Amino acid sequence: MRALAHRVPRTVRMRLTLLYGALFAVSGVALLAITFLLLRRNTIFRVRMPCVDMTEENCASRLGLPPGTPDSIGAWRAQQHHTLVHGFLTQGGIAMAIMLVVSLALGWLVAGRVLRPLRTMTTTVRHISARNVHERLAFTGPRDELKDLADTVDGLLGRLDAALDAQKRFVANAAHELRTPLTLEHALLEETLTDRRPTLEAFRATFERVLTISDQQARLLESLLTLATSERGLESRVPVDLAALTRRVLAARPETSADGPRLDPRIAPATTAGDPALVERLVANLVDNAMQYNVPGGTVEVATGSRDGQAVITVGNTGPVVPPEQVARLLEPFQRLDRTARGDGHHGLGLSIAHAIALAHNGTLTAHPRQTGGLIIQAAFPSAHHGRGVAR
Image (tube, rainbow, N blue to C red):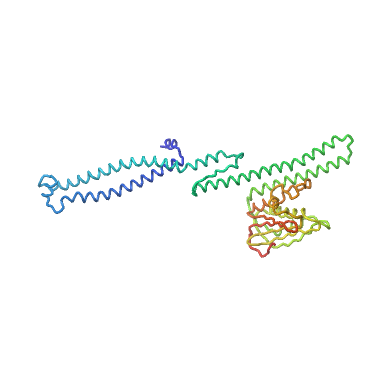
């Protein structure tokens, strides 16, 4: 039996066919049993009818039985009943066996018809790869479970296509950002080696520039690692005091010049749960971005608090005017408002890292441009408890 079970193909079509056959068999047996009970009752009544209101002699004479044998009438009735019941069961069993075979054949055809769209979708998905992930099932038919499944798969393919495009852009941008300082380092070292009269000052200047470029590469790699860690999600969560982290970030910032941006903190209690190091990195990135892209004598407003069951930090600055259609792009990796700003030590990863950290904490990060210039960026996290402070 086990060998036979392994040889029988365990397909959905075969299972549906066997299910249809089993349902027909159960229904047939039930119908046969009900018909048998009704026929048995009717047969007993019909066998007794010829002798109603008759004496045994007259009944025996009418039925052609020998007279004077009262028991022969009962035997005749029993024989007639047995003959009718046996004939019904035999013919009913034969008819049921024939119909069971027919039901299996019809079940096989119906199952194939029902599963045909599913086989088509399976074949299409099987031929979709990274090269043609833009293709879709485009299933046409009535609004049923198969249509919902096809639309769900199309939505999944769309998200996968967008993710692959984003990954390709990210890899290309990362390769470009890493290749540029390497090329510059190579040029500096080659220039020093080809100098026929090198001096100690020339060597020192070259090494200082190479060291600066190396520090920029280290920061870039650290940012890429943080971005990858944030997008992977959190393995554990602990209580995080957003207000305390913000105070620590602001206290650790170096003093700005007289014409530099001025900090305007408004810190209120805000508690969430997550990774304290990542949340602190988010706050530092938002503050650094607001300070870096600002105007002389501008301000940076930093506010924390609780609102609508969320721990919120809001950072706004008085930087250059940002077109509204460019705001969403700034949240992507290696995207800057000024595309020509290269070699300034910033790689356009600050806001994208903050965005990834917020998503890893089941939060949100939104940015809105100011009409007078600058951005208002708000990160909201699920609050550990409702506080009274409000971040505006």
